[in-house]
Length: 229
Image 1 (cartoon, one colour):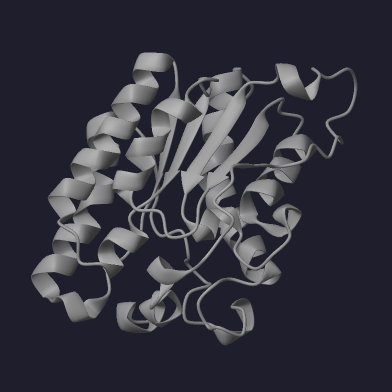
Image 2 (image 1 turned 60 degrees about the vertical axis):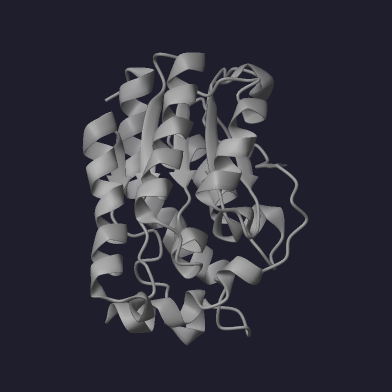
């Protein structure tokens, strides 16, 4: 699948509307045995765009809630907080991060950058915004573990831009010693059956695939954080 096709499903992501509220994934139980009350569990904070917010779906259908179910089935005592907002940019995420850090997370998952690419914003400015989000989170909790979700820029921005944009995510992950999800929408973008009628936002089935993409990386991070192997 070419990157051009992948970005057909993201063409107007920056203009999508959402309620702008932080969403918390529900606890599903299933970890077995005695478990910490939900409110006492370490937080896995997802900060992101409409992809994380679950635009057009019920909150329990969005991938962060599906990840919570995977966490519970694995017997790992973490609590997912969904802080996705439709139309969010890296600069918007930076403006919100201090408020979100009122409860410092044990794990931060950063899904930002798609709207920067769609708007043709400077990749270096995006890099700095993402770096500052991670820096402030580490200041709030020096032990935090970070996961970065990679994205792609639209090809109409030109090869130099798309290459510079693409490089930000793996380079920042290496710099910050963060785990990397190579491409959040792998297997979903550009595939009609996994996107809503607008051709832009993933369906519930699409979010199932995204949750698998995230879990492939996040599970190892959570087990390391919990000291469970």
